[in-house]
Image (tube, rainbow, N blue to C red):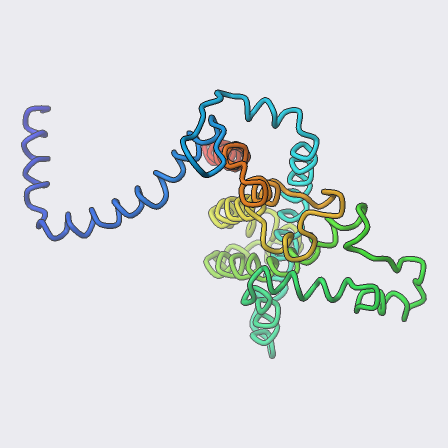
Length: 300
């Protein structure tokens, strides 16, 4: 059977027109040149000491040992964990709640969907500048707090090390929640409504219908949303840089902003590449762990 299968496979390859192989080869070369090669080069640079000029000096794992004792890096790593949990959790919960609320057709529902998705149209930098104005001492946030008598809560939100990270997090969630809502709306449209109707006839409550009928049908959408959210969380840069630049006193520093500082402010490209490798490893760990768990649940 093996001797027959091999000629058949070769015959199938020969039957494909050369122009098809050409169209497949071009994007493959572009992908290797613009994605895989820079990624592999980053792994190599993380093992060197390079200032961007001259030859890179190999230093082995010295950059990673320095990261383990770098207080700013450890603080950024802690902030990134908070960011992944807060940004991911609030975006998913808010997007799911809005999708469920706006799933059924009713008057004006399209307007509500468009209004909630609108922040996603703006870039993260523009969003950051917009919210930076809202957080000013005389901005909208403090004005509203004063209007309802909560003068004690007024503060300089972005200048306070205890609130800067969470203030930026609110702005990022405000932008992301509309995108998650759209993904969940697409998933809800693909569910089988007859199952929901049958469970309602059997006396299931609205929560029971969602938990045991609708939610299992959103498994594929959840996988996509989890991957997108984790990747977006770990590569967040624009909005933090536009609002705080990682300050004050590195209180809102994330791995991406610290990597940018090391690479382009201090021109320590080997050290910055080591941080990039850590970001890549964290994304890989989160996504692979979730996919393994989801696969096991499907097998059961």
